[in-house]
Length: 64
Image (cartoon, rainbow, N blue to C red; front, top):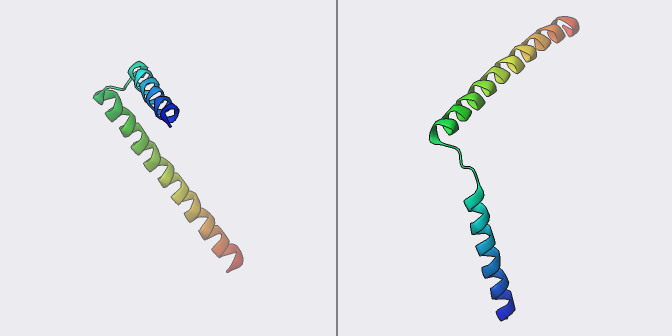
């Protein structure tokens, strides 16, 4: 039982040491990346909506 706890404690210590090595983004980098993701998502959403609209109209004409 003691062996299990020592393994858990060792694991937590290793995780803490590895988290110390992580290069965390600054607030400015995080905000910039978030803006890029939001803008890209909006552009792709608009693109898919336009393609869907065109194909819907095309199929309505072809099958109507």
